[in-house]
Image 1 (cartoon, rainbow, N blue to C red):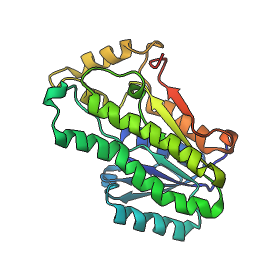
Image 2 (cartoon, one colour; image 1 turned 45 degrees about the horizontal axis):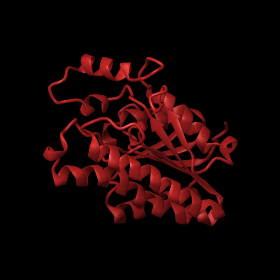
Image 3 (cartoon, one colour; image 1 turned 180 degrees about the horizontal axis):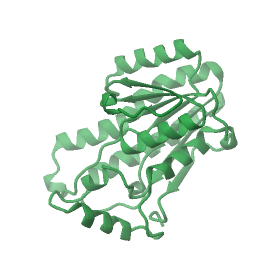
Length: 247
């Protein structure tokens, strides 16, 4: 699965999953631009052609300028991986504020609209490209108390499928990955605020039929496949990397 010299943008690049994706793409000799509000926290830059940019992905003008800068520098954008995301702590619906709802929808869904809208015009110029959305198995296997998060991830999947059919005439593919409970810093954010870390990990691990939490590298390997030419006829698909949690 050769990604040599493909120019790939990764949002949420400073998160646990984002870092693993950037590292794996760099190992595959891709040219990677990692974008995150906390890009300054990425102290350990992986070997390879990796650049980090600090940006609020919800600022449409900033995203437009940044993508234009990337295209001008490299003359192409081959891939976009939206690994950006925020978790919701377990909260009864009557206690969910409108601000919390907006936060979930903006970061987990509106950000996709902004980035995909922008990258599409550059991919259309070359009549090729691959777009990947990191959603969540919770979109199809909900858990109580995560209703705003689940709605945002459902929107993320549906929007990506809509982009798959709209962009297919331009040979641009769009696919979704549904991670299951993952061994990242976000995991504890889904639990009640007073839950112990080890207790939370064990609880989520028990919900996975294969009996293990999903590691960031598991997602990164799947991203490599969907970006590669080996997946040239895969679009509009949802790949479950969830240890069977979606069954």
